[in-house]
Length: 330
Image: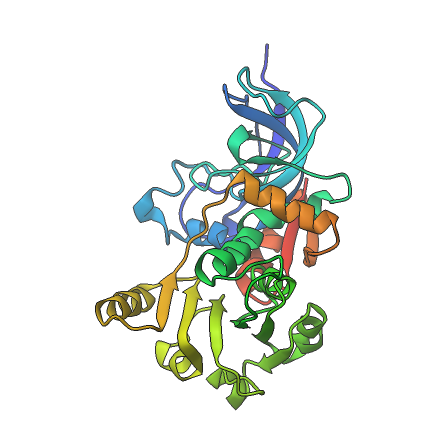
């Protein structure tokens, strides 16, 4: 009996950008022992997805093999469960994080590990849910695990800076920092200042102005925590704006930030720079989905594209000026 086929988008080598993506028909995957088969309703594109295509992560064997179906953050409906799956049944609405090594999100169907699949409340749309795994949890865990912020508002109020606040991670970071009753300063482009204020930011800097370049709070506040969502800002810019024990959480770590991280440890500096890569877990996805259900957190959707136009979504993500998340819908 012939395998059932599905539409998918793949690339077969490193490089190529949007033009390297090809529309193909491939077999619908079969769930293994602890996996679920999902009929996908939405997938979100993260910068790491096209950085893998560029070859930036080939040293750690990403992708595992070619051709590769990219994207990992998805939402959909359970169609089939593996024999040892206990927490999900056919018909359940879920969100999931697939692996970067194998991907699978730009397709009509995908298999996900039960441990990285979370229930999706009926009040949360597939597009809203698909934005949560990497971007939402990067913001949440950077704030709580490194920044020392309590999202329930019971902690000491802190001064938080979020750079690139209108981007995929930044929009979540601003909202979550305010949820914790903190004073939030944010940077973004001039066209997004009012939008970022609407997310709850107390002060917003145009990153192209002298104040924005210097990251200087208009109220003169020193930052207890910086959620750094962009690249190219040297430590010397952060240093004068940090509180005595301020921490910069670098979400796009490169060689210079790794050097600064090591130097600060060696010199026992109270001011710290911490490179951070999120470890997505089911309980984190469940927490964020509940916050969306309760109206305490919003997934900001920049744009939606059908699977047939996935290369346009890919190009928009590479361009780097999206406000919030870019969603592909099979």
